[in-house]
Length: 511
Image (cartoon, rainbow, N blue to C red; front, top):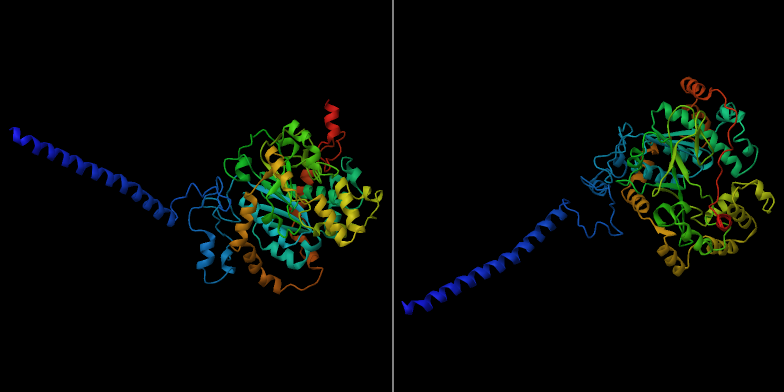
C-alpha cells in the first residue's frame, strides 16, 4: 500500500495538469471565437462596431441606423446609372430612417411643411430640400423668383415629390394685394421700402398664402425657413424634426428654434452645407455670464454678437385664424399663441459662408453705398456694412475685409470659445448632405428632369405659363376667403423683424 502512494500522487498531478491545459486552451479559444464571430457579423452588416460608430467619419447618429443595404451599394450594383436611383416612383430608400422612403404619399405623423421665398439655384436648393426630407418634412412651398424661377432650376424642382413651386407673377401680386395684410397696420411700417424691407413683406405675404395651401394639404405644422438655413433637431430621441414636433404637448401653438450662426474657417467655401461644422450658439442657449463675459472676443469688432439676426425662427401648428407675424414668427387673429422655446434644437443659419455672398447681395439691391441710404435698405448693421464694402472696395480689399470680419482664422481664439461653449461643432447636417451627394440623390433628380427640360424653351416667360398651378384655382380662393374673412380685432402689434442678439448695453441695463 505504501508503494502505491507515489503512483496515485503522480496520477492526480497529471490529471490536474491536463485539466489546467484544457482550461487555458478554452479561455484562449473562446475570445478568439467570439472575435471572429463579431467580425463575421460586422463584415456581413449585422453588427455595428461601438468604437467606430461615433467616429467623425461615421455616417450614423442616434435614430439614424440603417437596416437593409445602403444606397451606395444600390448605386454600385445598378446597371442603369444614376437615373434609375430615384426611378419613376421617386421612392428612394434612405438609410437614416428604418424602412422610410422619400415617398410622396408618406403617412408619417405629424405632417410638416416648410415654406420659403428664394432666388437660389439648384446647388443650394437641392441639398436644402433633401436634408429636410431626411428630417421628416413631407411638403415644401417654394415661392421662386430670379434664378430659382428660371426653367433650368424650376423644372427640376417641380419633379421632386412634395415640392410645390409658386412663381412670382403679376397675377400672384394682384392676388396678394387683396389679402388682409394690406389692410392692417402690423406690417405697414415695412411697405414701400427697398431691398430687405421688400423681401420681408414678400415673405410675409407668401407665408399667408402658404398657410392656406398647408391647410388644404392636411399639414399639421408649418415652418418658414430661408434656403441658407437648416433645422438642427437636437434634444429629440432621434435626429428627426418629425420626432421633435411629435413630442410637443397638444396645447402648444408655436415652437421657437433659436438660431446658431455659421463660423466659417476658410475663405474658399464652395458648398456650405457640406463644408461648415462650426457654429456660434444663440444667447438663449448660453449662461449669461458666459455670453457677456466673452462678448467682445466673440464679436471680433463686428457691430453685434451675430452678423445678422438672432431671434430665431418658429414652427406653428396649423389651426384656424393662423397668420404670419413677419418672417420669424407666427400669430393668431383670435388669441395669443401658446409658445415654447426649445432648449437644445436650433436653426443653423449659414451667414455669408461664401466670399461671393458679398457681391451677390450687392447685385440684388440698388441702394446707394452711403451710410444714410443703406439704412432705408437694410435692417441690420452688418448687412449695411457688407453692402458698402462690396459696392466701393476692390476685389483684394473685399477679400481682406471678408477674412477679417467673417472668417475665423485664429485657432487659439476658436479653441477658447469652443471650450467656453460659445462655439460648437455640429457634424450631423454636414454628414447627411455629404451622404446624399455621394449616393447620387442630387444628380439623379436632375437626370430625371432632363426629358422635361429638353422640351422647355429658353423663354423667360416659362414661369408665367406655369404660375396658375398653385394657389389660383377656385377651391384655393374659396379657402383663402374662409380663412381671411375673420372679424377684425382692434389692433395688432407690429410684425417681428430680424433682431440682433443682446449687446453689452443689455448687461448694463440689467445691472
